[in-house]
Length: 536
Image (cartoon, rainbow, N blue to C red; front, side, top):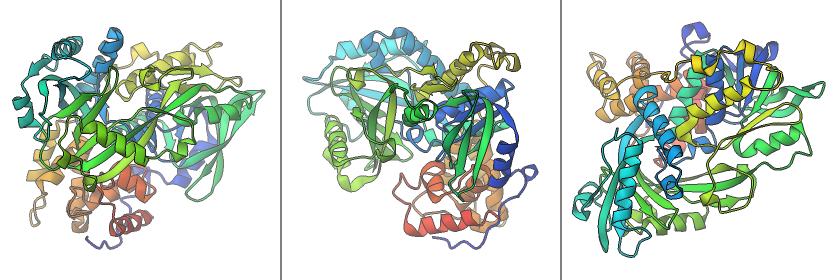
């Protein structure tokens, strides 16, 4: 690993292109009265802040940890219509999901999403027959207006050419459909950037310690900066609780007698090294309702997910031995043993789905978004799917416009008058960006490696050119962070100065892929911490 010398921040003032300091941001948050304070930097809160800022509101967004630091970076990494929803007859929901999926992957963030072919293996004695699954994937593609081709059935031999580790014993046929894939943490960060570009003021690692009240109404929050212990507050005309699994914790700050409004379901995943290349994903039916995924993702293989009720502290959610065994056992229905060796596991993670309160099996519960108003006027939003994050933002904004007394309606542009498919920062054809990175390297120095160019193009879009400039100006930043990963040190400096990275985990887990690859070694972590400390 390269030993970095001191690399100063790219700038100390917003005019130079870098972010304002945390002290400057805290001061800005403390001095103003915001129209909307969003508490919670998961994708629901981020999307709402983005749409609220677009509508002309003065918006602040805070999170106790990092942006997308919990469930929003612990998903199955899919933008999908929800094939399993056809099983319950939710045809309209699937069509709506497909609309949002296509909008994000084709027009809003084509630089952050990529199409992925899925194979549904049909085994002898399995929960579904070939005819049923064939009809299902045809209907699924029809609800997407056949924009990704026509769902159909292929032979096991053809499927195995794309998925060499596919188990073919008792395999009768394979149904084919298409969805899209993303790096959820990168998608969330780009949406934060879009919110800031629209005027929002954001701060991560700032925990709410209490709410502010005026004549019984929630009018702001008291906060503590976890990086240095500074206490400050934010005033707002309206507060939105978008804290995901912690939504009821904040509701009790508003009203100690507030009844529980949600229940939680844990979804665990494993990341493994691939033994051979995969050109398609597997979606294997486990029973009538559940599917287990095996997804080629970030040069690795992502397996999951589980779905079980969770009643513990959200901060303690983790992957247990039982989760690992379940995921590997279910994957073994369709994947050969050599790909499922525990020695290949590089990382595991778990997230919590937020479901409406009530009885019943969590695996059958609707992933719907619920917006409620508390006794003190605080709004709470919970639930939903990553695929529909833009729709959720619009839904919350429409709710704000319709509040009794219309406290914000006169100051905000109606959602139907805003662009429906506003792109995220960096939008570009990633193939074109990768080509530019490969041919525009420093004249006297070595060209950028193809895997690094491709990685930058598909995680930053056109913003990758800014990272390349950093690497060209400082050769140390052009070096790989770890020899087995495509990331370079310029990404760490960029995360520090442009992407709100405060801790090594912010960089290693969410702004790069080093942790999920099992490459966040002590030396790598030490180098990242050193570079983060050089921000001043």
